[in-house]
Length: 151
Image (cartoon, rainbow, N blue to C red):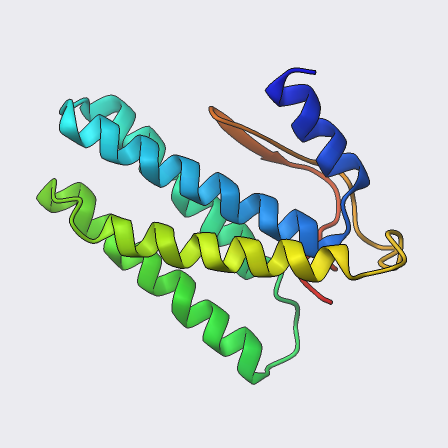
């Protein structure tokens, strides 16, 4: 099974927690790509990669729901912090802060994945669309993701 096929299966069968974990994985991979592009001074790919990172962060924020609570506010603060770090990385061409961001995202990814494996009913979120596709070169989201990230 290819990487994309395996990923498609994970998206099609994952619960909301596992889908959040996949988005964190996409962030990690795009930040690592950004580091490579900066070391090669490939401006076109630097901007494309940073745009993908911002798109994923934007999607994560949009899936937090309408409730105003401590988890949502802390998550937004975290995503805005990551965005500021990425902006500084792109502007200054300095990747010294990306390692700590990647480690933090790996911890979050693992936590969300672990939470997802503890959910017995994979279909508990009836409004969640399985229309998210992700690859090394793209993240496409279609349909309703109103329940993504709620557990």
